[in-house]
Length: 572
Image (cartoon, rainbow, N blue to C red; front, side, top):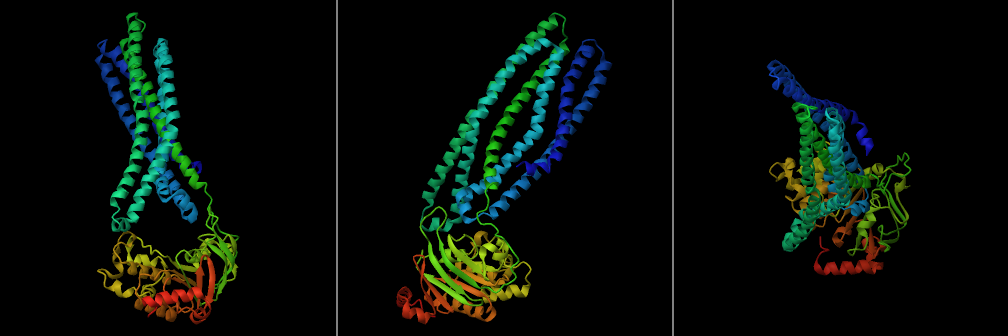
């Protein structure tokens, strides 16, 4: 993590220099006060009181300016460091495979990129600024105190070991607790995220109370863990205050004896009390810094876990692949999800020629969505190979491979913003005419024009302001706008009525005839128009051919057809 800090460390060091100046000015003030008392007030020298007092006001103002500048520079350093660290984390997460995201969990990744980064930022800021302050108060303050009277060393020898022992104990005990605390926060964020994303499901099944109870449990675990941490920390200050007050009494007693013996003046005794206060406050500050460091190190460890995670799906031995026809070939492909031994796909082989349409149909759980996810390398095959334009997909860079494929997923994901913005994600450089052409082909233009601001109508978060069919059509518009050779529709027309779906596929045949299409569907009416149909059952392709061919020689396809025909789903 130092590599993110090195770039901005010089700014922090400037802040440290200003902090050194501020602390030196703070350490000079007790001496000046002693001079005012001993040589001014007690001797009736008002001129000295005025001259030293004015100088003291000036250096106090100067010290305040140094403190402000120190805070500004250190804050600039920590904010830039946090920005770079957060960006690196986000970049790494964007390159994670689905498997890695599942391993970390979404809630944990959110906590790490927000709360954990903030904790590390605070640690850096405290180390650069606070550590300089407390160390100078301790070492320089102790030196100044002993120059007033060596007898005060006995007070330091008694108080310092007690405070250091207390700090060491708290750091030792709190380290694991802070790590546990962040894990509890992960769980709370996960529960909140799941419920916000699935709000409609929760309400539809009247599960509000159940989810509230789940949240209450996670939240109570977080509160209890935080309570344990606070209990541990809360007794530090009272103990330190007792030590500080006892040391102050000892300084007054020893100093009083020295003043009575004429070996010390009253002003010097006042300065000694101030120095002791600065020394012990510096140590109290050190205790707070150690708490911040302990929490920061726990967060830094969690951030390192993300940064050290090498993306499972990486760019292959990329080479210049100029051919862009849109052909797809599966060669003896088998696949099981990482960590699972059950094969989801078994010995899959087929070819799709450029411009051809292949429909995939089968029962739920037969492996249809998994099949197409291998084309874009959302996962890597366990056995066999997947080829695009005659090249193994592992030979492409991920960007180059996915640039050739336009994907519409089962769940239509929309982003907060306008309809225009959501469609233009497919091709930010597209013209207005190209965008409207894609929307018309997707049968989205008609309902968009009925929106209050047409294409500039704002879409609510996750597209909550639109129906399922409307979201699907915007997602298809986005995919059609992308200049790709392959279009994959993963059950992406399920919310459309048969008439709208028929018009959509007719528009694809007329305006996007060069696109290679793979269409996953549950309805016979959807797949009947395809050049070829692949029928899947329990991870295998049990039949492939035209509708008529499959009706003759594929029992599974015929069963699906008969079951849907009886319901009237095959009618167009």
